[in-house]
Length: 158
Ligand code: ADP
Image 1: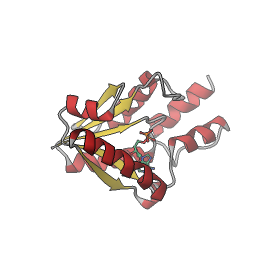
Image 2: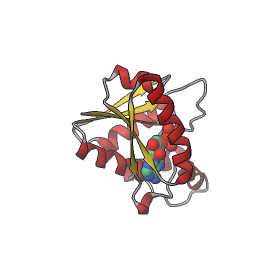
Image 3: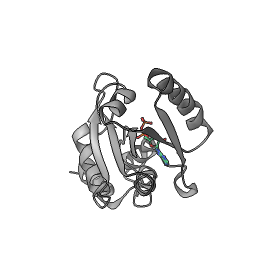
Image 4: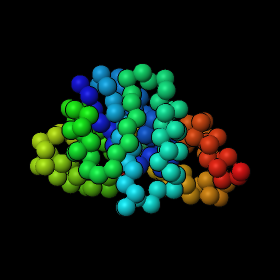
């Protein structure tokens, strides 16, 4: 079975990585679908930067592929013949939004969305939080993989 894990990953965190690792154990193939929605996205990191970071952190997982898409998640899922869309759930706020998205995507194409509950140690992590800490030169090592921390430090302090 193939699953598509879409997101902005701006930047990738331990929360993302944990979901990817768990999905790689459950599914034959995991497609990480990186959003490159130039018109709507105001991502801090360029898509090429986010892709490179995802490539580095997912390198040990041989059944994980990074793909970039612009448009609807359902179209990307169809393109890669995914059996389901995967989303992480951290809290009730995530659930309210994700339930709406999952129902819409199902109504549009019949594709299922699978939810994976975040582990408690990562449930508070978000890319927004990481960007805020990084902008104040705070320590990131507990929140993001070492490759991501190294890149952010270089990028912010060239
Ligand atoms: P999006 O803009 O599509 O929500 P994100 O990069 O913020 O993109 O999130 C991508 C996916 O990763 C979402 O399903 C989100 O719920 C999940 N996710 C993000 N942070 C965590 C975390 N700390 N634990 C578990 N899942 C997470």
